[in-house]
Amino acid sequence: MVNIVLLSHGPFCEGLLKSLEMIAGPQKNLQALQLHVGESPDDYRSQVDQLLSSLNGETMVFIDLKGGTPYNTAAFLKQKYEFNLISGMNMPILISVVTSRTETATLQDLTQVALDPQNTGVELIDLKNGGNKRAKLSLNKN
Image (cartoon, rainbow, N blue to C red; front, side):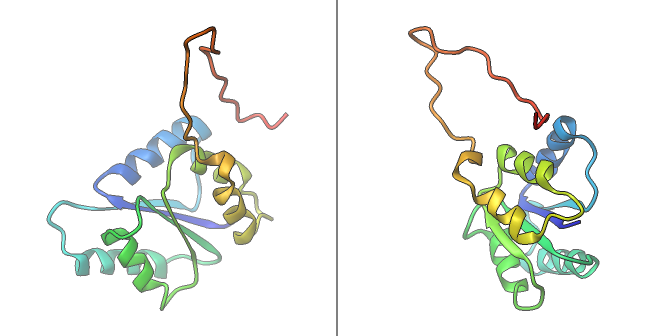
């Protein structure tokens, strides 16, 4: 099973993981590691390095945004480890990835799921003029 690592400024990644598990159930091979306020980039890099070194198999690393310390840390560690790095993590993308993650799904399969524009979850909701007020979130693929 493809490993998933979530990296972010502050507790965003840990909160996202908890919320994800509330919706999709407990997850295996999925970990979050936040950059704490005041933590040095070198200390954070050491922690991420240790986490990545403990993983076996294919890995996806999601970061909150491109250009910050979590991104720079992951980009630096790509020199040492093989993983796909994806910026802009959010709940719709993670739900799509974890519900597509099976024992046979490859890193490339899941990367395509993550990059599918339909999974961004960004849209303007206009409830005026009889717009649909309810949305259905279902993990049932049928």
